[in-house]
Each structure stands twice: as C-alpha cells, then as structure tokens.
Image (cartoon, rainbow, N blue to C red; front, side, top):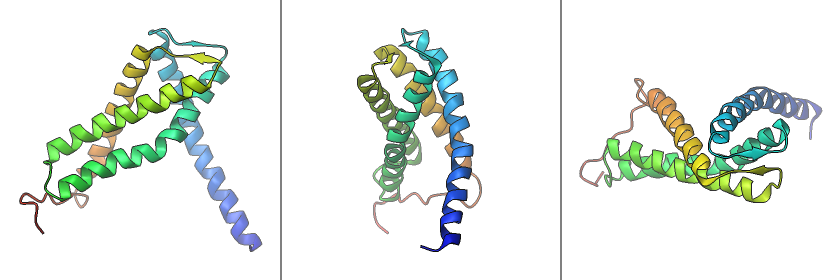
Length: 151
C-alpha cells in the first residue's frame, strides 16, 4: 500500500474520531444523567462513556437498517410517508434498547434498569428521527411515494 494512501486513511480516521467521540461523550453525559434517574449504577464516568460507546458501535448497522427498511417499504407502496417515520422510530428505538441492554449484559461496571433503557432509547430515537427527517424533507431529498405498489 502506498504511503500517501495510508496517511489519507489515518487522517480520515482521526477526523472521524474527532467528530464521533465528542458526540458519544455528550450522549454519555446526558444519557447517563437521564438513565441514572431510573436506577443506573456505574463504577466511574469512564464506565458510562464506554457503555454508550459500545452501544453506539453496536447500534450503527442496526440504525442503517431501521432507516432503510421503512424507506424501502414506502417506495414499494406498502406504507405511507407517515407510517414510514413511525416504523423508523419504532425500529430505531427497539434496536437501541437491544444494544443498550446488550452492553449492560456484558459490562460488569454498569447496571441499567429496563425503565432507564426504555426512556433513553425513546428520547435518542426521537432526536435521531427528528433531525434526519428535517434533513430528508429539504428540497431535492424527497422519496417518491409509490401509491399503487407498481412502478
């Protein structure tokens, strides 16, 4: 592999981490505070950050699926636009709950209650869908709704 390609990959990875880690840290602080109200116990702030980092990494491919599946169903005419956003929200929330529960299961340094996982997942998914929906509703980003199930 050429040296310039390796340098480009390293620069890209560094830029990605420079953006992603503060976002995960912010989610860990806010999510950790909210989930603590519902019985979240942790050994240190490092444990909270690691908990949300593991959940975010595990949730990334599931979030793509949660967004793509309703979009595909709408383009096939199986659901309407309003149903697409509702299904996207529900799938995103369920996947987030699964990843948070999985991170809780495998990490001894944190203990999360189901109610806290539910609330954080619902809020996180609502924010995700709201932000992405605003972006998708901008001119030029519309998805054609197939009302008859045919092309």
